[in-house]
Image (tube, rainbow, N blue to C red; front, side, top):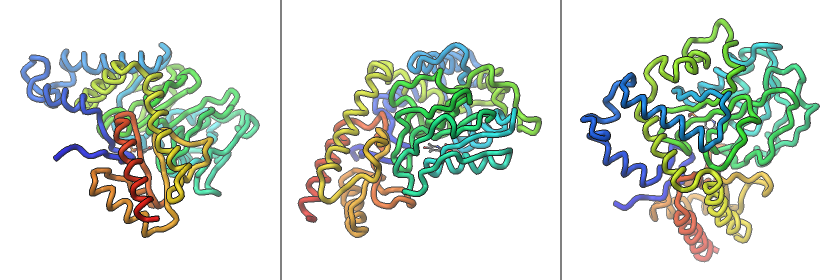
Length: 360
Ligand SMILES: *Cc1c(COP(=O)(O)O)cnc(C)c1O
């Protein structure tokens, strides 16, 4: 069967080139007589894979020297607890902006460990916008402020970072990782699960300013202590070896395409095709205010549940899969991460036009 266009929010499409290379190297990685799946994480050959992955990531994201890169497990969701355990260590206060389910979950986890405060929220309008804040909304003595940069479920993104003054900013970038350039130095910590834009599931990348590490609470499980992982080069225990290898291939693919500036151009082009259509359609409409629209996740609806269901069914039959929206929003969502080719979006819009004409 030919490959489908997978619009899933995650795990999501990987570049075909990456899958082919992994297939080629499956039985015998570069003449070493074994698969990356089988080799010891303490071997020289594996060390070169993880080192290269980190080196390319540093180049692509322009990560400053004083930031540590960690390749971890547990998903983004595990970091919801690790973050307060590692960084809620001064006043015990942390300020969260609530922009959807993921921010809410992170906030709930932080409340277990200290004085977590929701300083702003867009819950009043089903998280269809990014709430405005200013410096005075954040407590000056907060240990950190927290945002979910790109809201996978609701399709919003912070185009401008909140002004938190001297309060260190921590961001979940799971669903916009490597989608465009980001100024790492503006953050204390950024992190994300890899299964949206970077690799298959099983890998979480944490990038943290070095001076903030080493003050985890006493009760912090060793495996959640970032300093332990940073000091051990992500090899305190067995890392997700194969997923890191695929991550390296994806990073090489991005570098070959021209880096994050090029990636941004590509992603803007793709998103524009879809948003332009949504803005002109009489049947479909986007659910997010135009100024906060994500380049990665595009939720949209018709005014009829019946039509939504019919659309999803027909789209699936044509090979446009996983277009069903999150249960809290309904309708549809097209996740158009880095690996989604432009033709995928063009063909989807072609089908949407046809569907609109046939069902008007
Ligand atoms: C998918 C996602 C998560 C959850 O990731 P897991 O790796 O499944 O824990 C958290 N935050 C955001 C923004 C996501 O998109």
